[in-house]
Amino acid sequence: MSRQDAETHVKIVGWLHLLLSILGLLLATFLLLVFLVIGLLLAAADEPEALGVLAIIAIAIGFFLFLLSAPGLVGGIGLLKRQNWARILVLILSVLQLFNVPFGTALGVYSLWALTRPETMALFGQRTGWQE
Image (cartoon, rainbow, N blue to C red):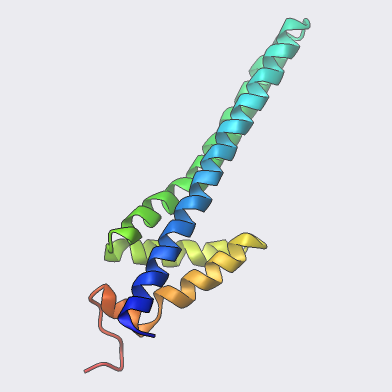
């Protein structure tokens, strides 16, 4: 793989992590709104406790999805800026993504392959074990 190929793969990995994270944040926002609207409808129909319960559930789910999405967003942006810390962060996230079947698994495998290549490591200024 050439240096230009490595740069292309790093850009693709960065954008894919960004897009997956943005989808996670959009899903968190959507679920938060859905739960709050349902809670408001139930509160208007003489079920005032429903709003409180659904608000707590909505906040918990939204916060959980935000916690899952934020590192990928930060890592994707850092990777596009060729930050070495972002490469390490995305490698860690890629291992965790392997359990997110099917899209996370594909993204995890591709990211691990692209970011551990000697050409990619050289792009980030790291020496591989076999280089002198």
